[in-house]
Image 1 (tube, rainbow, N blue to C red):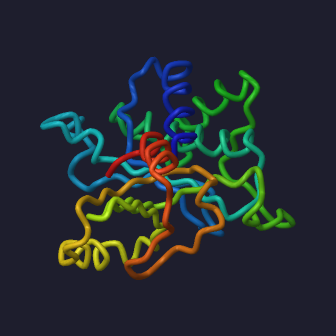
Image 2: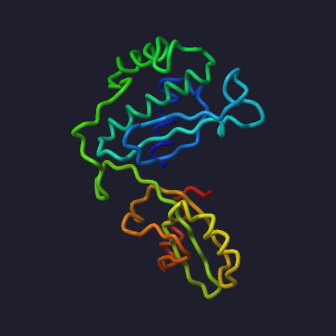
Image 3: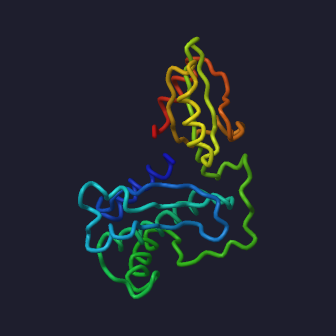
Length: 216
């Protein structure tokens, strides 16, 4: 997730004059779409998304880590979606989803050494495996502190987060808990739990990890 945010900010400055609102970011496992940009209906056209602080909620930019791509390839996908965002922000109506306006911006960026494409064929590309250095990871992490001074960390299956959150509020021994997202590979070998359980962690490691993650 930090990788996406950092690269988005860099490209926003370099190619879009810091004119793009930062979207929500999501990392998924789509086989058919390397990237996508979703817009909330009614918040985009006519620049209405700038009103009432909703610019960050108007867009969700998604990147798939299903395939074992290089960092350069991931950046091309990100730039592809940022072109879509740029067009949406401007309010310009393109001739098609990848029409004249899109292709004009794409050509400008490709002259700077990128290889952005309208579509990318992935036949023959390896599926990313857990230990790949190229895989962008996203973990939903639960950090728990208990009344006896213990610290626990869990990598949680997002589908069960609400259920676990409700359960936590009923456990008297839990004195504090917080939710985070991170791409830290410290969590790579941890199962994504579906119930309230976690790994006992010393306070120093707990403090270090929670200080580097993004709170929810």
